[in-house]
Length: 365
Ligand code: FAD
Image (cartoon, rainbow, N blue to C red; front, side, top):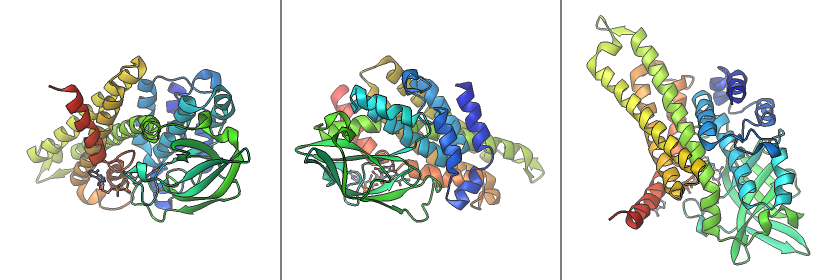
């Protein structure tokens, strides 16, 4: 764990701002993090992973998120791909794919389509078996890390159910179009992915397919939501650190900013936001590690709390730094842009609220 954390610090260093402005991560950095197992650290040791618990992987994810949300986004995609292969792949598929993901290859996960965002039940991508081969046809949008990925896990309709196909990016019929100028996580390699009758061996369909679409998506997103939630904790910790340093160092009206009570209230709110998000994530990871039946609701709650707190907390940090945060190169300006998008991905704030309301109706009273 220490090694993965140190490696992440060393490889990212203070370069995240430059990568954000350039809109590009160095692939060598991603491959090195991948080779050391740091991008999908919960993968068991037998498959070349670090075998971390959800709690320890969460702290690693928060550390990455505090340094660079674009790298953390790639980490979330890689971890979600590995989790999905572990969950839905058969033993042979796990042996085939997981060592690749812990050996330096990169992966992305494609659910969303132009007319199927929150409503993934509306997806039209098709995975079929034709003459013993899998054929994938459809158009995915906003696939994080797709421009770096060697493998794209594509979710689609499969007969009357659903399936996940592992599609090598260089397969004939796969075409990527970069999402131009994303407002946050700018270097995370988002792309729209077009699949024109892409032919694959049938063994590329995880577990042979035939899952219920809603169950499949919920299970895959479980990891993504947990990972985003911890990434937001990292954003909050970094905003708190930068803000506290600034208000101690700068004076106005002859007094340290930290001594102005309206300023210290902002700092107190930021601390509360960070602590509450941390506790929600720790609880969800404990549910994950203990196999608690309340896991799904705990993870959605953690994602909801952390992403909202990060969006508000980063706005508070911008307020505290004022003109020092009023340009793109500022770490808290980057956090502000990155954090807002965390309320959109892996289930928007509103979709999380619907899930939590259903949970309340089913369990309370
Ligand atoms: P819409 O579904 O059109 O929603 C618009 C608004 O309506 C939202 O506020 C939403 O909450 C609200 N709304 C919708 N339905 C309801 C309802 N029933 N009740 C109340 N409110 C509702 N997708 C992938 O597959 N893979 C990825 O790796 C990936 N990465 C992404 C990275 C980023 C930075 C972004 C911005 C998106 C990414 N996405 C990815 C897509 C993302 O999952 C979708 O943007 C998200 O699910 C929302 O869909 P939408 O944008 O179409 O919004």
